[in-house]
Image 1: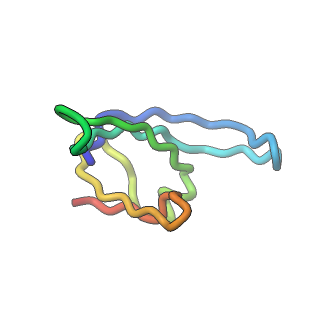
Image 2 (image 1 turned 135 degrees about the vertical axis):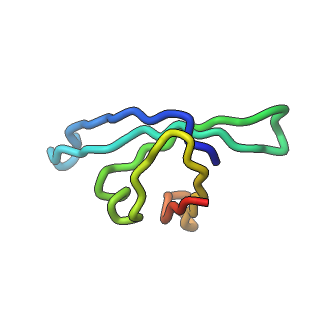
Image 3 (image 1 turned 90 degrees about the vertical axis):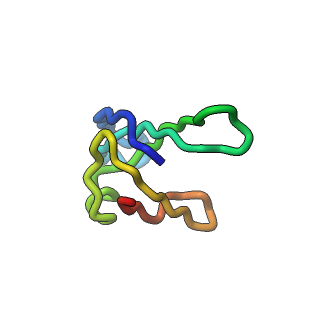
Length: 78
């Protein structure tokens, strides 16, 4: 996946009232069901990014790991 955009998005959780800091990370990737590139938007809190040891930058090539529930469980630079 290639990072093509980053947007800071913070919000207050309706469930806990906690203030959450994070980012939308916009990516493109090859997909055998798409002519050309597919795109996606991922949301990651600042805490999760720190946990993964990743600071997003436009132009990064990244590999994202997902757990069995479809949640992001890791990110690494390629």
